[in-house]
Image (cartoon, rainbow, N blue to C red; front, top):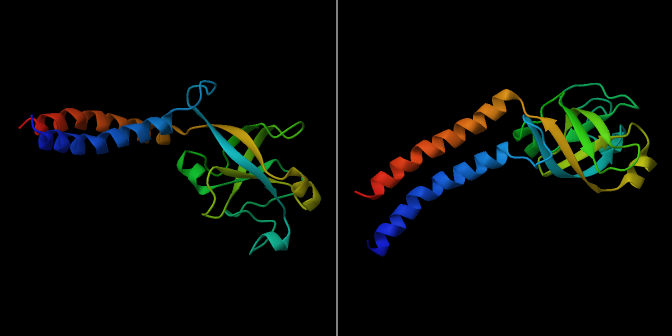
Length: 171
């Protein structure tokens, strides 16, 4: 077979392989994640209900939820929304430190520029948020069945297209 035929075959199968890898990454989590759960390493910081940190009502999250001092709430970057974190999702956070690890509820979302990031809600306690700074953490959350089904469908479609691409290349 000529190099040209090999190049065409690789070009046809590359998109299928990429789709399969992306779909697999959506479904895969570290070995510690249980079935139906996903674990992601994120950068954690903190935010407050003060006018300087928002363009709107400092006590209202992006979805309209009322934030109150003492709540264990999170804001999440929008890429985490695509992974299955939704409004009201209970997220287990590890790696924050004593008294901060544990369960939080997603009630807010962050600006589009952030990736793999969470913000812990700290009410009006600005000094505590500054002391918290930035830390690496692992979040674990339940993947809704619809998201898991979408990823599984993408993998199945990629696998089904693989033999078709190979048979076309052989012509």
